[in-house]
Length: 93
Image 1 (tube, helix red, strand yellow):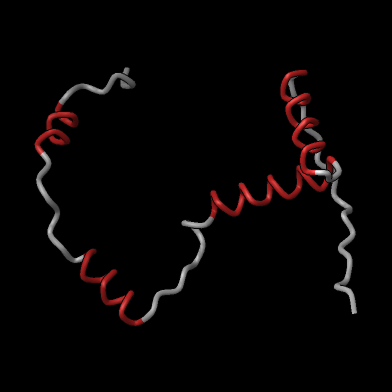
Image 2 (tube, helix red, strand yellow):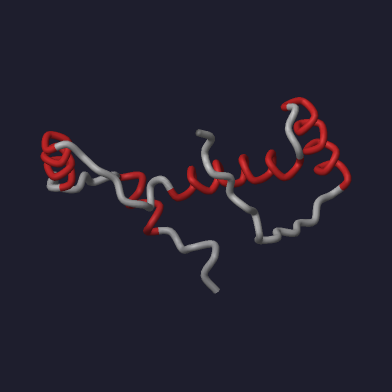
């Protein structure tokens, strides 16, 4: 039995430069897929990567103990970081 197909019903429109579009088209040709599949696959992979450290994650009991041990260590004094924070911000008005 084949897996059920998903119907794509939402539209996504983007603007690109001619160079970006040419690059994308060349990549689509190189992978032997269609433009929609290529873009959806790579955009969703990138989105998962961006969100990976923001979503839930599971640790083994040993991993959770190690996580707690690391997070309970006292903060280290970093002289270079202290000097950086003592300087005026280039972004402050």
